[in-house]
Image (cartoon, rainbow, N blue to C red; front, side):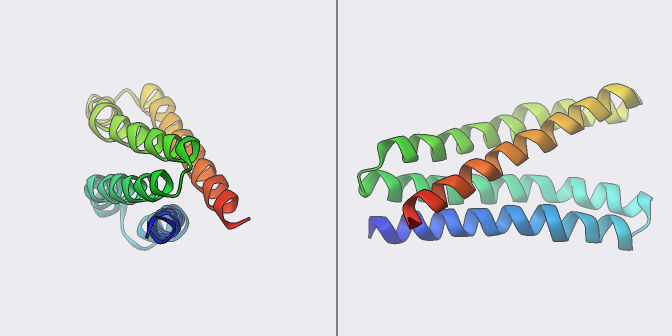
Length: 132
């Protein structure tokens, strides 16, 4: 049961992250006008972050059950990083956008993209580690 949870949690997590970043976001910004695409994509972030939290916790539980505590810790760090992005950084970015501080917003947004990228790499390495 633990191996199933670990594989399914990590695979769902990796697939969801890949879909959101490489398909959903570019599609929204290329097909919708800016006055609709921005608010729409912002509305998706809480759901995206919830998905990442749930799947990373499932993966961590599976990794713990299979006796991989260091892998489980890495999955929990993904959970913690996502919670920080969701409840601390996302509101901060929204304030920067609303106050019109474009340069600060761009830096903050870039940091969130990098943080997501690091999480993606961690999940990819975890999945590769349990597959090999």
